[in-house]
Amino acid sequence: MSHRRIPFGHPQSIGRIERFHRTLREEEISLHRYSNPEEARQRIRTAIQRYSTERYHQGIGDIKPIDRHKGREHEIIARREKLFGSIKRNGRKPKVLTSV
Image (tube, rainbow, N blue to C red):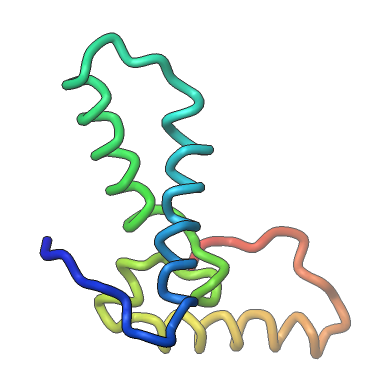
């Protein structure tokens, strides 16, 4: 991973990393007491992996970052439109958003 500076005049870029840090703190760091630095590194590494591969992100259309990175974003959105479009036509609302 390489260090990048945010572009001048794009403060929203820093907002994304700040939101990531907040989520990491809320979903991992604040919930555990680590017995040693290696345990902390391992658990945080696992949390970051989960954040990128298993967690749905509202800011990118409720998809996982890994799906967006691999170019599956449009396929997922199309499947959701098909599913929720048929529900809307039937006059029903979905009870639970299922993973696609």
